[in-house]
Image 1 (cartoon, helix red, strand yellow):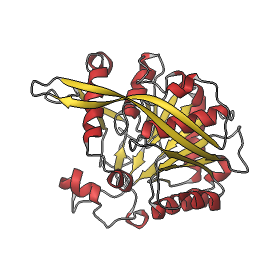
Image 2 (tube, one colour):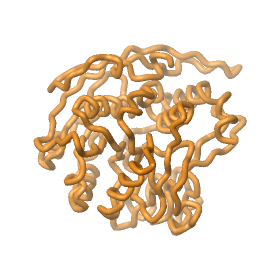
Image 3 (cartoon, one colour):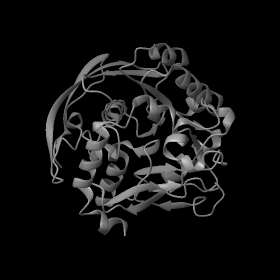
Length: 343
């Protein structure tokens, strides 16, 4: 696999230090021509990191990895939710601070969590934030880690313990879960969130709270798009008791809002694609797993997590040239292979 599709950092010797830098090659769209052809430019990006490890770190526990840029209120709410459900008892927790101007370090320190500050001159790169944290986990001897969005919350302590149990029993490389829109009392926005208004206007005024946000994988043929088959969230807005989502099954992908990983396999696959900075990296790595005979698992039978799917997306401003770049590049990588994998 090309160097700008894999995390270069994984190939190097590494000891966790208070301060370190990571250099990564990555691609971004340069020109989109009128005839449909595209050109990309190669970037050499330096990520400057600061690391503060929690005092009770245990290599025998799985690790939650939670990136954020500012959004103190959201992070505080998420921390409270984790503590109320004893997740910090069962897991190490890393708060990744992506170039924040707000004091995210204090929130992490006061909570007793680990803190990773990552600065770069290019902008948001979800892939590299998580790749760096995964490498730290690997170096500290942790075997499992969960990519956990800052706007993702747990409903019951038992649900995390159960999905860890199923993940291990299945000897799964990567596992996902059923995600629901949270009830209004858990949301930081008004009844109709900006995300619903902008992306799902047909649901405005309807009952979408506590319905399915992610119920597994599905695909849509999008012939006029740079992506021939577009990945979709299966049964979005359905009831969580719907047997089509209230089940456990193998899938083609799970969402990066919650991905439970065997860290050694994540490293082996090259991590999240650094050139897919904002979108499709979760699907991309799952397809790489399938290509290496590792089937992602979806666990939705009688358990779920809440995903608000709004504060993180809108704050970061996903709709820009990077999103277009991710879309075109994902298509270039997978369009020829997807028909044999998803049909």
